[in-house]
Image (tube, rainbow, N blue to C red; front, side, top):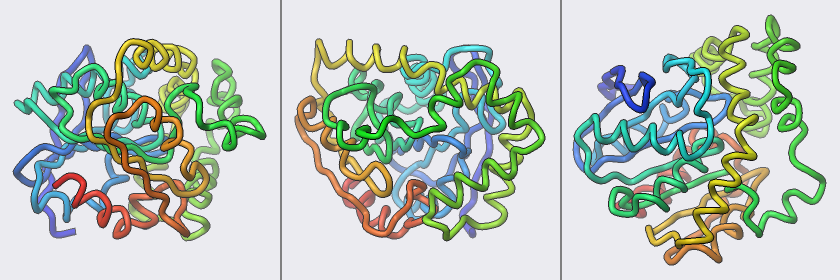
Length: 278
């Protein structure tokens, strides 16, 4: 990549986030999921940075950010993002979230529509909102329950992190895999019991996050222009969840694309994102 990327540690909401910064222009905040770091966005940052200031943090507890003891619910993660933008001097931003980055992106847009200029969310569900019944017909994916049991997954997986992360990277690209350097960065980021504890804390906070999302939609609507992007396996479930609560929603499903859209089909994603971000 010829793009010049600056890595900075930024204090927000009692943690320090490791943040990749590139480009100039209207801000675009990119929120990754599991098992990723900011490097999830490697294949899309260069084109985005041609028109925008790209802000790609490692989320709380993940990558090189503070391994906090708590605060992994969507509302607190949204506060992390809000504080990050403030610390960087941004008064508005487009916010893009995938997987675990989607619920905090959604709540930030619900709570601070004056701050969030546009919202793009991908390959996740937002709490227990109606619309995802078909996706959940066979129950939640098996790893949700495994990760949710306090202390279990990290005790089982410590020493076997590479094999576990590889399974998600292979499945999330329909067998195509990700570049070796990015794969190695992800494995490094999730190696060790403490790194795994932080990752699985996102799953342990899901009931709290779902309650926060339910409370938000009970009293207000999503007024920010929103793009919902699906692939395999989530498809259009996220769009169907958002449709009843959003004023301005466009949905797309990218064909022949795995869960890790920014690495599996970066060009197709950019073809949707660039005109939407405008």
